[in-house]
Length: 212
Image 1 (cartoon, rainbow, N blue to C red):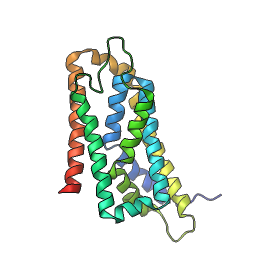
Image 2 (tube, rainbow, N blue to C red):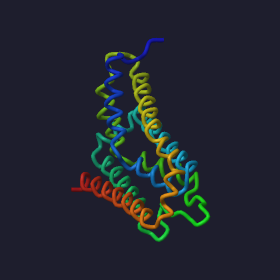
Image 3 (cartoon, rainbow, N blue to C red):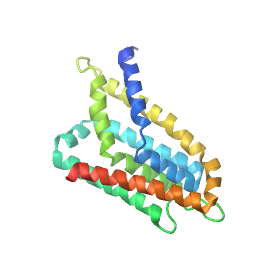
């Protein structure tokens, strides 16, 4: 079975995708937030949720739904606004008395595996930047003259998920060591408030891009 994409084209995609993944975004911040607040296992479920979100985007792209959303301005703006609101809400939680980075005295997880997975899936699916990634980046590396467009798309999507996981898994695995620092109240507030502000800023930027 032949590889569906030319090697040179595929290597170029890997470089472009890697540069995109390494750019901090809502998914990375959420993984850091939950890993630091609730430990490695919760962090791993957050990483898993992000990857499931990417699988969802892949299915949407394959069936053309993502293209339909972008083609319909109102539908895309609706997704963008909902996504921005959700990301902003997560950021606001950092300023609550028991924000998302709060660590109890007994060190018990403050976020369940189920909640971490659910929030990660929604954060990824509702992020219009990811939709644009699939629709702006992928077409540049797909040869529409071939009959295996679906195979090409699946190959690119799987590669993106692998790159994403390779970057995000260490963030979760490092949580145990980093959690020790959070026993210091100043460090705790610095991290929780900083990540909260970053997520709120991302939400505001997304809203300004789609409402102004």
